[in-house]
Length: 237
Image 1 (cartoon, rainbow, N blue to C red):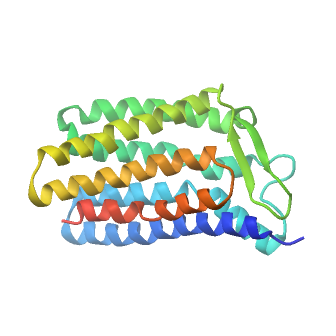
Image 2: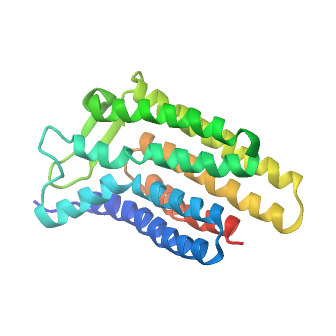
Image 3: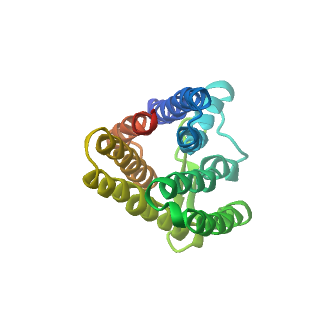
């Protein structure tokens, strides 16, 4: 068996997100160290972890190309779920730290502390209750298509992901948009870039879990590849 065209497109769009986030993350980290810009450094780490959220399908594509087998041992594909979602916690914590620093500096550590606690609960469910967290965790055609992971919408793991996405949309996406409206000039433009970046992240992340592989999902992933660019533009100086 060989990877199907659908599986290849699924994997390649995931690879594009991982690689674009890694490249801009490394570049941003270099600039942050050079300029001693703490917030750009936090943004760089956020970029890395956001990109790694697509490590599962990227790794599965590599496995299909090299081994002609999906990762994991059928019917147990838990490793795919772990590779894809273990990065939710660090992504959220660094993103909330960034948002807290710029939007609510006095309450920054309260905000970060709350999401660290929620992230620990999420990771425990993900690691120790993986199979029950998903309604579907298997490829449509083993050896040809990428593993599909569909959350059980009644499970706490899904509920926590929903809370995380809504929080990121409201506090980061809308929060930075409000800051943009309150600011002027270059600062206004930078807050707008940050708002666009986080809105793209939330919409792409939600769509990836809800939309079946196909043209619409691959277009959304193409837009997601710009996430790191928006964050870099918002914090480069």
